[in-house]
Every structure is written in C-alpha cells, then in structure tokens.
Image (tube, rainbow, N blue to C red; front, top):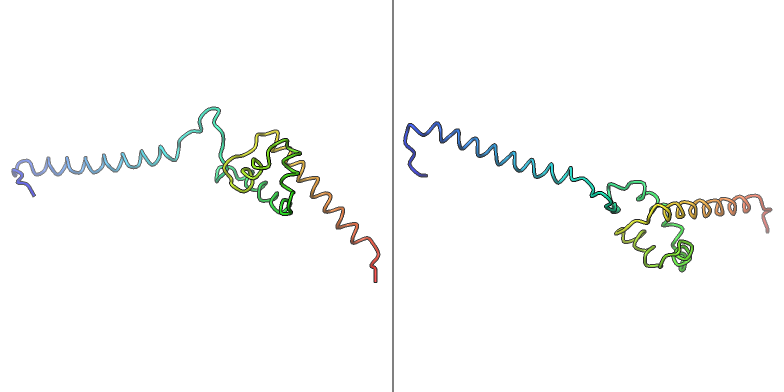
Length: 129
C-alpha cells in the first residue's frame, strides 16, 4: 500500500467510502434501469413472462393441434402461412395481432364445443354389445 501522510488518513478514508457508495449506487441504478425500461411506443410485445394471457392461450391450443395437418388447417382459417402459426405456438418468438388472437379464441371455443357435443353424444347413445 502507498504511504499516506497522517493528516490525510481521515480524508482518504472518507473519499474511499464515498467512492464505494458511488459505485454501489451506479450498480443499483443500472439494475433498476434494466428492470424499468419502458416498452417502446408502438413496440411489439414478445411472448414471455410479460404475456401471461397469451401463454395460457397457446397452452390451451396445443392439445388441439397435435394431429398431422391441424396447424395447416388452422393457418388456412387464419389466412397465414403454416410456419407463422408454428412461430406463434411452438417457437414463442412472435405473437399474432389482436384480430388473429380473437380468431384463435373463437376457433378454440368452437373446437371445445364440438368436443363437448361429441362427448355428450357418446354418453347418450345406447351401448352396443
């Protein structure tokens, strides 16, 4: 360590404390800035933690798109390429616009109604032996 004159030891210790506090404040400010970054005006949300409703919709759609060709049929109904539907639901890189999201909700609702109707029909039909 370098020699410090005895009369400068107290001011040097104070300066050292101030420097440490300034560095800690700068680290905290940088962390808070990253956490509080506003979304760009007109910016697009990306799927992730900030989009819990989209995450639930994508999760609800998955069981209905397992059969070969289901995504292609859905893509045709949405007037999109099949790859785009894959990006929405599997890759989780993008999300559809509001209109297509509403169409997805309607499609899922119709699909669930059809499944419920088929289940009720099977329950009500007489058992064959």
